[in-house]
Length: 378
Image 1: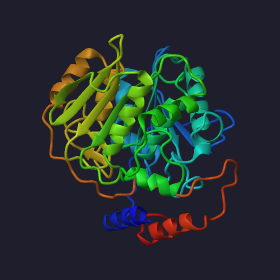
Image 2: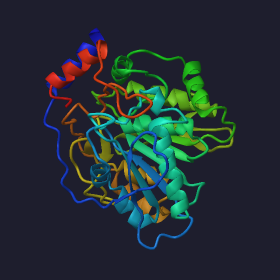
Image 3: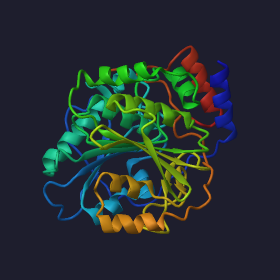
């Protein structure tokens, strides 16, 4: 229990009121997208006069956030207007998780069939069909718990996504339940390379096609989800692509360190971005370059827009715009510390069927009572 108690104590020391995002939403409600076994909400953004065959980006918010607040902070819909692609924002509900965390540590929600992962896949398929989008250019990204769920989508639906980007997240299949999730967040408990790869292959149910590419983003000073998790994710995805850890090239953008691994065909398949001094959140740069996003809790103005860089790596931003953005992003600002160490806090997983489970007992009840006492859970 020492690891769990230490985590709860740290979160309590950093506690602060949950922020309320009051910016008007640019998103439209997505309805009639399937059986929705995970009981999620869905929102979309489709620029005016979007051309047929456009790309789709699926964006997964972090805990305590909403689809609209994450869009406002990250600037994805503004970039979609400029570059011409569609957006899907699945949203968690408090009925599923009191902190609005996607349940990345619950096996029933991260399997190919059933639960939240299937709901997200159903929304994605609906967007492709409804707006005549390019099935070969579908991508997924997310922060923290949304980042961990991004890994679940890439692992269980590799045929659906061409690439992904995980920000402050965790590897697929490394935690089942609250206790293990808290340990993984702190960087405790190692998993062998073989077990990491086996978890993905098991989740994909024998996928034998091309695997999605992956970009990993993490703050070097993240006190909520240890930066050690970025290395675990990289090990897992390098193993899936069969690339050697030593076959790496390193670049810098401002103070950020960018490592890239390529496959035998020369395709960049795994990237790792480390932002020194940054805490837990999405890196943004609202004042320079593409002027995307708005600073706030877990939206950290560090002089580099992860939104712009990720979109560029997926080929969604024109080269001229990308070059301008890259030049503007080379002057990095001092990294702010995270305001609330709450965004990836897991709570008791929900059952496979609705309605949700009764209040947990035993160790999970102890954890949740401590989180409530600390003001970190409702």
